[in-house]
Image (cartoon, rainbow, N blue to C red; front, side):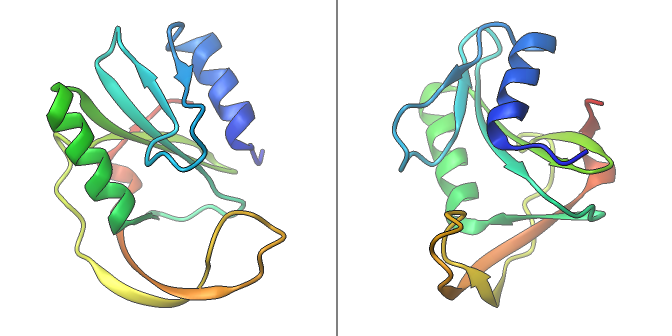
Length: 131
């Protein structure tokens, strides 16, 4: 089943993280926070299943920086049609970074512009399958 970030947020809050709070700033480098779990969380939903899940370097860097500032865990939660995986970047080796072209500028479907981005990949085997 393909999830949206809103549905993923709601499922996480209901099933695992009752204190989860959605960040209201649309330009924030993370999507939600859990003070009980000391976690900044970036959510990503994929329409296709991949064994290697992509993260943009600038999002990774900001997630790490903000987590260090508050002594929180930098968490990346990614859904695919085959499940949901969580990665705590305190325990997952930093990805190898490379420039990749022809990627959507934003997740805003109205904006069809393609750009180059610096991205890395984490294997689902390095994460915890949530469901």
